[in-house]
Length: 102
Image (cartoon, rainbow, N blue to C red):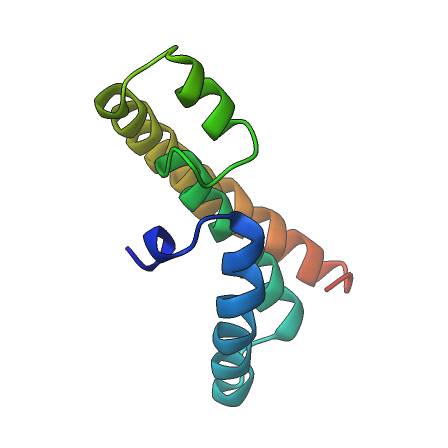
């Protein structure tokens, strides 16, 4: 919901990610995994907000779809992407940690 206060993904990253990264660092979370998780999670906002990504305003402004269909498709894609990040992403991060790459 916080994502709706920012007109672009870049503004959200500049304003919010340092705060989240600092909180994660203070709590003792691994820095590289924290950075990857925060950056991956930024893609969710671009999928749900019709003005949050680079192509969104163009596609929405031309009239290819309405806001209801944008939110519906965005919600479905966000859930699917989240599931991929939770399953394959966590597995891949464990592999990278096992290989001492993170």
